[in-house]
Image (spheres, rainbow, N blue to C red):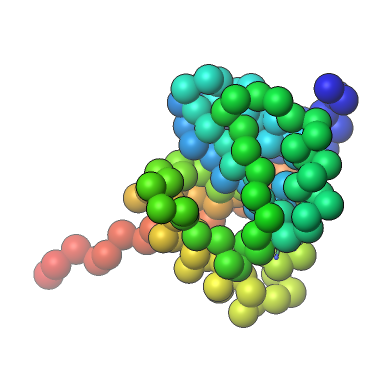
Length: 145
Ligand SMILES: C[S@@+](CC[C@H](N)C(=O)[O-])C[C@H]1O[C@@H](n2cnc3c(N)ncnc32)[C@H](O)[C@@H]1O
């Protein structure tokens, strides 16, 4: 397996990963980060890499044989859990156009989908910070007065 680039290694180290987590990567491309995350979350964890490009997903699948790692062709803004699929604990998106701040309508659609596909308290980590910005997906309701 090719070594992780320094850029993606910095992302990997910045993610609050724990063994057993279920992680969703949006815009996974050929899957380098997804593979590294799958190693970190271990056999009790699971990683789903999604990309709108079938070619990217096929390339990712060719390079990945871990049992806790799958890929799927889908847009970030159209993502939904399949029947029986458990929600994710953490979402990451690196260099994904729909989430780069220039497309607020796509971003709003993606965040809505992610709220429905993640556990309470889950966050989206995106490369708008140094190296990541954390976006909480489930804001708590204001306490009753
Ligand atoms: C610049 S590449 C980055 C790949 C990988 N995240 C990385 O950092 O190496 C952007 C990837 O995001 C995918 N992508 C762009 N917009 C997307 C969207 N709305 N939904 C899903 N994937 C998307 C592209 O097909 C491409 O594979």
